[in-house]
Image (spheres, rainbow, N blue to C red):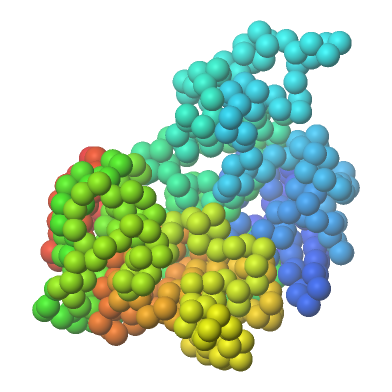
Length: 509
């Protein structure tokens, strides 16, 4: 592991075999066909430490975690757990050794009660008979340890995202995990839920559990972590105390160059209104009205459950609208389905690109083409040459990094997946582009590229609706901000440069 990079020292820490050192990974290498995912990675974790692992998409973080978790074998290098060499051939092996990983997409079974999920595959049974009473008592004890109140008999699908995450943590504790790996644990949480999660993590830290915290939210990294390890281009470039870094230095280590601005310069907005929503109703959305001007980036925020995504889906025709009008360039649109919206010039980049935006097993080119085939077809025959040409042009213009056009979408980084969706909608000549959490799960460098792209769309005269729970980017990117609460517009801020996070949260609450 590097001892000194860019003038920042990496503390030596206890020697291998020390009681304080839970984990040591060194000299790790891993290649896939055509890709060197990790060329030289090292990582260590101390007992009772929260250690952040950060880097751009494609830096090798996920691969390193999957090697630790037994999903992939390392091509080279060694893993030392509690002073002894370890080599896991499956996640079950890793869990048996005390390593539990909580992924951004939870692994709970929604249709089963909490207790069944806690003990799935590890039931308290004797002669084939499960001791339900003992499992319930153990579940209550686990939640008491975490300082939360969750009914073990509740079906998981009825829990909030934050509660489901706590069930995942409880399941790890039930398996006697001493190392907890958390992948983007705050991505779907409200600020209040994040604060509570951090309280619990600090309590677990005090119990001697070591945690690996993987996140793109840099402010939270500094808030919760003791040390930070940065990976770039498949290599570990630095490990140091969190207090020895600031946000700017951390970004420079992640991207390998100075990043002067977090948000690009804003551009002028036209005077004429292009897009209107009047008295929109459906689901939890009740009487939402707003107007957006040519070239405007209109920010929409609010707490989870406020109705932001529901509103976007109603506009896009993904959910049934029971009232209201949608008007583009003075013409009322008749939208009853996403197909109607696309033909009318409206597109939606969903908050969950994997579940609702991409066909993950399909190629990048097929994902680009899926909404645009009619543009290259005549009498039902697709002009493949034109399709390929347009795809290659969009890939070049948007700097989408691909091994080949046939690379499956699931193998792309989060930032490149997002840009692939943008390429699809640019090709369809959409005039209203709705971004729902456009930077969720993508790194700081890819975020800036996404911000530049959003600015370019606005400069072309399109209307951009920018939905986000990250208040710094709402303030930094948008020309105007609407705050939603309980399915309604609760407040409006005409000049985001005068807005504060406290002001916005006040409206949201």
